[in-house]
Image (tube, rainbow over all chains, first blue to last red; front, top):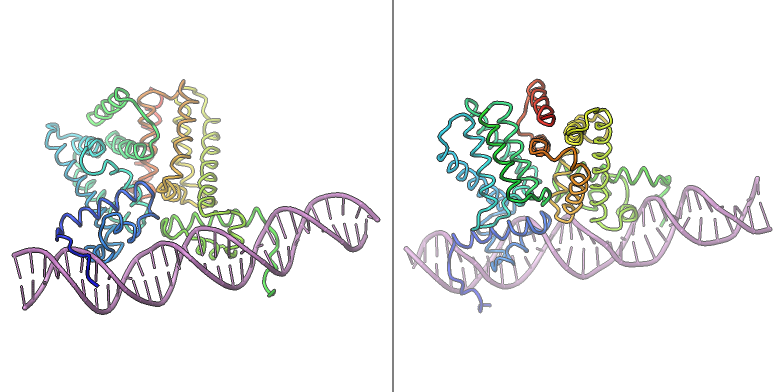
Length: 187
Length: 187
DNA sequence: TTGACGAAACCGTCCAACTGGTATGTTATG
DNA sequence: CATAACATACCAGTTGGACGGTTTCGTCAA
């Protein structure tokens, strides 16, 4: 039959839309809610359309994860450009990038949530492992002190606490925390 | 019909078994692999049996999460008993407990993995939030410095890195890390 | 000591809804 | 008009869970 696909063709937009919906579902209702039907339905796209852009569910998840990593990379690079001191620069960049992504107005502020949910899928952890390994090798000269490692770990902790909604701090407490972390990177 | 249920009644053991299997499945194959069929099958228990112990899938997951929290509490309390210095005692307990659970020979060493996977389910995050809030209120007198918060966050980071398999450190590097963290709790 | 009896532990089956995925369209756009 | 961007229909397998049955076990009267 034939009444209803007069949709305008907007491949990039639709693809973006699908990823965003998948992210929202993941963060709001958990991994088990991310199904092809749910994603396509909530995007106003048919399942066929979804599977045209992402040939399988795994591909969809991997694409989503990759887009998050890209955003993280971009944020880190931006933060590092504004930092004149080489020693500990990557660690500070990582810290500020994670904080910045959280407060980003555009896109989903669920960055942390989504990442977490995605990391619960074993086959996506591999990608993260590689990401970490590459960075730690690249910045071994400037960011390998014990204190730097602690700051990076604490950053992950903030990211985690953020997503879990535990540790609700006021603005000033958080500022003191960040100040102290930055101080540690400079020792 | 009637050939095959001559199983001895061992309610506690079977219940335990079901939880362990669920944990193993979660850590090895991710949340999507934790299905009633999979859990009951791998436990040598029928699905009916499983649903007798845990009236729904959510109840199963909640029970699993609770059992992990209990183990964490026990480990923290044990670590705190061996610590004579009040200031920062809870934070050190938290740190050492998390490290100890990782190296536990008995049970599953997948404690971190399972927790992570479970936390990807939104309705279980609430429980974690409550856990954190209770503790942070209880130990506000001794563990509310900025450095203590950093140590706790870094502990979460270690826990995270551990489960993701990133940051593979050798024994001595880890020891220096822990030493420095303990030092921070004493400032 | 026994044995009846009810509850708890466990089993096997069935089902409707949903799962990821295929196959085959139809339409827009260069 | 060729190809990419969608839609529609359909499928085989899986899902959570309802349901009614069977077996074990503690208890308590006789």
